[in-house]
Structure formats: structure tokens, C-alpha cells
Amino acid sequence: MPDSPLKDFPVVVAFPLHWGEMDAFGHANNTRTFTWFETARITYFARIGLTGPSAAGNDRMTGGGIGPILAATNADYLRPVLFPTRLVAGCRATRIGTSSITLEHAVAGEDDGVLYTRGSAVIVTLRYATHEKIPVPAEIREAIEALEGRSFSA
Image 1: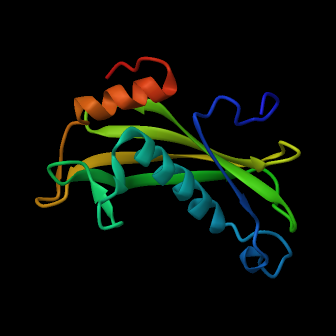
Image 2: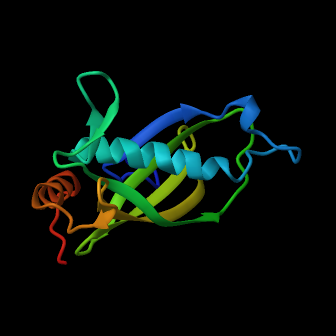
């Protein structure tokens, strides 16, 4: 995707717009954007080892019960998404803090590269047993830097 607005996103997920995602105004319901962002985000987490399938096929957190929790998210709607179309949702890190990771999201047309939405999410690393915010584990920070091909300063 050399000309795609998502060309610099290390994680990109493709999917069709489903008829049931349309609203009464004839375009994709704006709430779907957050589901598309989430799909790319969970794929990103699996790639960096923050979540993934267990031997039983369930999603699991990293060793020690550490996992991501969504602290904040937003979206900028640039153009309405009309049926039929195939979309791609991208995710990339823009910042790694002490106990948080800021991600950028975007959704574009798979064939025409039209940018429909962009947004961000702040993820906090949490020890789920105690609901305690913890520092981003070093191995997760290293995995993000390897996936992104660059270093982040805290």
C-alpha cells in the first residue's frame, strides 16, 4: 500500500463494510469506527505480546496477569463510509509513557485509499488481579520498538 494513508502503520487489518453497519442516513454508523479501531488495536496487542490466545483458545494477558485497559479514545470523522466498500484499519504507537501507551488509529478504503476516520487511544498497563496501574513491561516496550522500527523515550 505505498500510496495508502496507512502505509506507515505496522498493523493493518482489512474487512468489508457489512450492510448491518449502516444507519438510517445511508452510511456506516459512527459507533462502528470504535469497533474497527479496537480490531486493529487487539491485533497490535497480539503482535507485541500484550494479549494473545492461550492453549485453550481464550485471550490471555501477559504472564503475571498484566494486560491492557482502555483509558481514553477519540475519533475524527473525515468522510462518511458508504456501502459497499472494503476498509482497512491501522494502528501504531505514538508514545510510550511510564504506564501508558498512546496509539494512533485510522480507517481508509482498501482499494481507493480514501481516509475516512482517524483517532487515538490511551492504553494503561494494568495488573488485573489488583486493578493496579503498573509500568509498561520492558519486553512490551521492546516489542513495540521492534514492530515500529524506532525508539520511544519515556
